[in-house]
Amino acid sequence: MTSRTPDTIPHRADDPLEVDYSDPAANDFDALARDSVPVRSMMADDLNAIIAIDRRITGHDRATYYERKLAETMDESAVRVSLVAESEGFPVGFIMARVDFGEFGHTEPEAVIDTIGVDPKFAHQDIGKAMMSQLLTNLRTLQVEQVRTEVDWNAYDLLAFLEHCGFVPAQRIGFRRKL
Image (cartoon, rainbow, N blue to C red; front, side, top):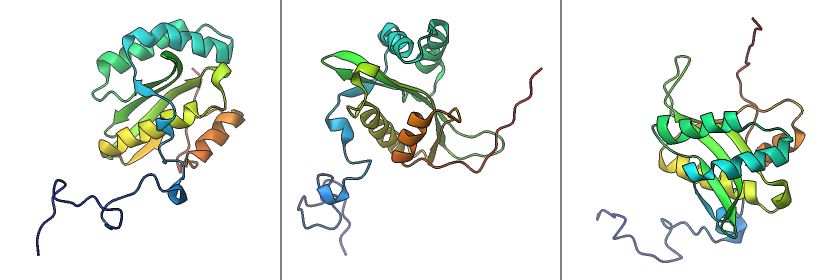
């Protein structure tokens, strides 16, 4: 029996070891949505665009929040996974995430999606789908086992988007107490 390394694997369509990502029959959420929308790693220069997109979504100026989150993404994160989607060279969406290697006694590699936004002018153009597809691909490469996020109970559009992306309610209940 011969061993097969990646450079000795034949590139034939009928080879059962080769995955055909272009097969339309397998076109679920993960099927290369990112090919239709350029998605790249987030950079410090993206701050003003991110703030502007969020302002168009929420109607509020949350510049201080995004300054802090971008600094965390750029300087404090051991693994950078935050992304920006572009149209004609300009940012039109962003997804901020981080990789955690455990909390509350769990030691499983897990990613947390902190913030996601798509410029309303580019809604329903697969921007969010492309960013999520690229994020999940990057996280699989890092051998992250699961992704989690939190969503406001009445954020119906975001809940529907996450469900479409394969997210399901977690088996944890968050608690909060005002001081």
